[in-house]
Amino acid sequence: MKHLSRDRLRLAATYLVIIMVMSVGFSIIFYNVSAQQLERQRGPAYTLVTGNGPTPDLDTFLEQRAGEGKLQLATELVIINIFVLIVGSLLSYLLAEQTLQPIEDNMEAQAQFVGDASHELRTPLTAIRTSNEVALRNSRLTLKQARKVIESNVDDAKRLQELSEALLGLLADDDKTLFQHRVSVQSVVADAMNLVMPQAIEKDISVDDQTANLFVRGNEQGLVRLLTILLDNAVKYSDKGSQVAIKTEQHGRHIALRVIDHGIGMDGETQKQIFTRFYRADKARSRSDTDGYGLGLAIANKIVAAHDGKITAASQPGKGSTFTISLTAN
Ligand code: ADP
Image (cartoon, rainbow, N blue to C red; front, side, top):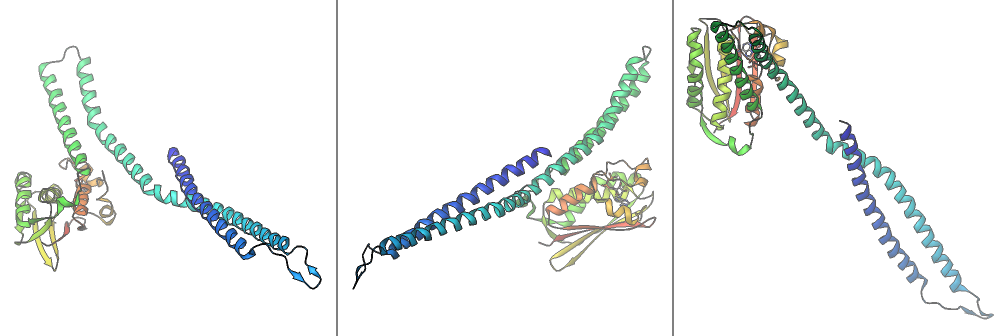
């Protein structure tokens, strides 16, 4: 971030130049106007005549006074400009810092994102490379062994594809005009359920859809994705034969959509971190049946934010979790 502090100084210098050009320009105009006024007050040259004859030099005296006045004015303006220079330097630096801070934060977040993403991409890539290298070194590789290597390569390639799709989901467009449609909650839930039912059936989990006929303002595709993430997690983090429910409630202009499961649940510490990119609770990591990269809820959070909505989680370890999304009715 060294170049940013150089940029900060450059921006501060630009602000200072603008301030000083204005201050000096204003001082010059003020000086000229005041000097003209002093000249006018002095009036035309004349000689005062008294009983003793004309006084020698009233005009010289007045000229001297006007000269002194101008000098005093110039000195005061120089002092003011020095003061403006000092205060202006400080203000310019603070202003430049304030202007660049959001850009700096954004760059840091981008760098963090690239770092996290590369770290996650490296694992399947290393697996592909290692299994291929080992196979290549084996001069008596059988067809059966080769098939095994290819199979594991296909699995890793699938993981890479899923991961890159999830990463793209985090960068999805959040143009506000895309989120102003009238969307049926029932149709969103039906679409999401279609996508998740195969996993639910495999684990013998029943999904009880109690969605009311309500409409929200938003983006249908985004909302299906959001609900799919929540339902997928509800199924993923529940034991075989468990139950999942989807409920809706309307409170004035707000519609709450809840996904309730009776799965493994989360402790308070975990709940605080679940919306952070790449976060996975240890329990989730250690369970072999729970594939994931810790990106689902980060994407869900982004979709909800694009809808100006809210997402919260209430959970108890061993008892289950309830994810609530609050959206605007339409
Ligand atoms: P992933 O499921 O791919 O790990 P998510 O971002 O969807 O990533 O979830 C982050 C973490 O939050 C999960 O690893 C899990 O520990 C926890 N979690 C999410 N949903 C649930 C749930 N319904 N029940 C229990 N834990 C959950």
